[in-house]
Amino acid sequence: MTTLERTDPIPDQSPADIITAAEASVPALLRHTWIQTQRLLLRWVRDPVTLLETLIVPCLLLLMLDIVVGSQIQKFSGHSALYGSTPMVTLVGALSGTVASGIMLGREREAGILARFWVLPVHRASGLAARILAEGCRIFCGTVVIILFGMALGFRFREGPLAAFAFLWIPVLFGLAFATMVTAIAVFTAKATLVEGVALLSSLLMFFSTGFVPIGAYPNWIQPVVRGQPMSVAVDTMRALAEGGPLAAPLVKTVAWCVGLIVVFALPAGYGYRRASRR
View 1 (tube, rainbow, N blue to C red):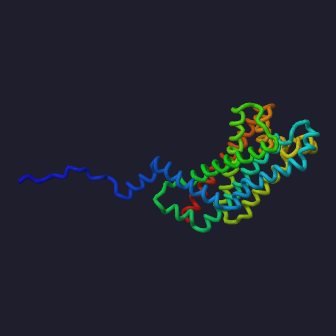
View 2: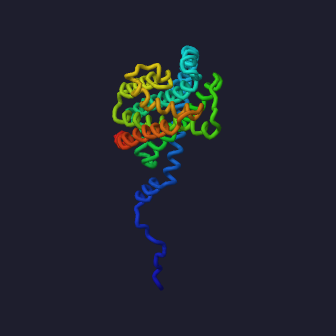
View 3: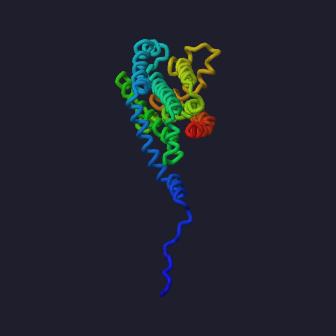
């Protein structure tokens, strides 16, 4: 009799190595990112604080600005105040929702939810990627709602559909840059007061921006600061896309501010998220 020889190849990898390779694949990253994005969006929809900060408060703020200072600004500048206040409020809504989600991230870190996901068979990068994608979806939807509310008050797009499409993405870019900074803070500390301090910073940016009142209404000594701060250049970009006016300079400054924030805080956010997940 002849000896039967084994014809099937013996795998070089152990089962653990095969599972790990599957977890680190691109299809796994896409699938796990989408699942965790759905989880975050569903949780935010069910969270009254996030909805309040993202939709209700910005719409009420826009209505209040239009009622209280809208007519005075129009008399002062000769233009409708909605072309400054509507872009500004979309940015405020993006920042406010980012702060609320940052506080929620800190709570998940302390509750051990991030650590539980770390030991599950999921792609390591899917958690942070899902938060970026979910933030972008939240900011975009909030921007659309606020713009529709502004249009009910009289806001219009006068530069065509392409400019209107570009208008919608400025708050997304701005909000994601700000979210990178908030995430870096939230994963390194459990104290919500630090993240809430960022909310105070966003309030200062709002009150000292060209979307709140025209630049000529500020004292001469502070006008360069107001004109060059990130919310002002973003508002000027969005005003140019909606009403017309100089676009290149404020757009370049907006992109520079956003890319700068992302470059500075992306690595700390990624390292901090990994560190918080492994605890």
